[in-house]
Length: 205
Image (tube, rainbow, N blue to C red):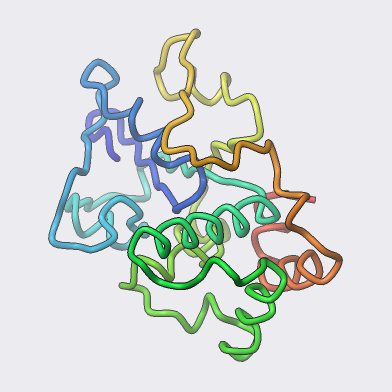
């Protein structure tokens, strides 16, 4: 989403509370343009380069960039549960696979770096791409809206009211505040390796 007048751009990696954030920011009174549907399959989760092209931004260096973010230890299992739910709805058999086998499969099928091998245009693949893919914080100054944190100071900077709240949208049946019940030592080890950039650059422990 974008506010061209105030030069603010918001990026939404999937499974970072993007539906909840977007449902609020698209309110006209906040001044952000809602993306809506475009010919791009992943219009709601555009990378910064795609957003620059889509919004015809010629001075991205003058923009303040915000991005929703989530601890990879919660984001990956959330994506996994989402995929299982969607597969079940479509009549596909994914219900018997457990989380540890799934995470191991990410490694085995993609030469240890699945997120760098997956197609950039494939919507499903973006569920598992590191969040630094959207806007490299070494190239851009990015302010992260972390779903686990109090973002009130950032909201104020964005010109939002003091009582601005993000509702919980698109929540499934798995309402745990985290996904410890799915994790094993092996899944933690693999995720910490695969998403090393997210842990370091987004300051997740």
